[in-house]
Amino acid sequence: MANTNKELIEHNSKVVILDFINALNAEDFDLARLQLCDDMTFKGVMGERNGADVYMEDMKKMKLKYDIKKIFTDNQEVCLFYDIEMSGKKIFSCGWYVIEDEKIKTFKVIFDPRPILA
Image (cartoon, rainbow, N blue to C red; front, side):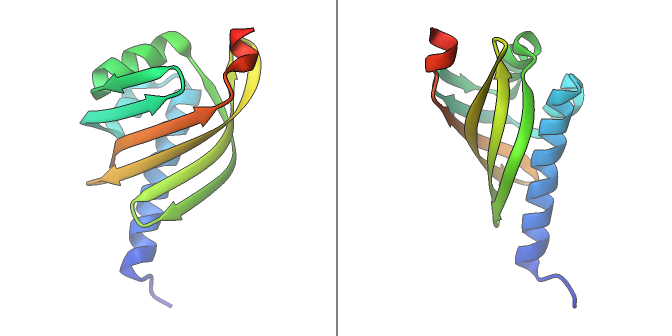
């Protein structure tokens, strides 16, 4: 059975996110950057970033590692549950990514910051 347009969009959106996360895990920051719109926005528990270059500079310093637990897709939106290794601790997190023109346009990440603030 042929893919519907929705299935194709969801597949492509999922691939963009997985390419992004896998590149971050491999510390291939150039490849990760290719998955981002230039004017992307990020909102997280610890702050916000506007612009792909600003965001990627932080990622180069933090070198986070992601262990994906579950991925959900809905058209051009992708939600991930994952553990992020931060400050030597595993933090369960949720990321909500919005894709535009097969690149990440916006994303929000939520997690309980208490283990890294202690």
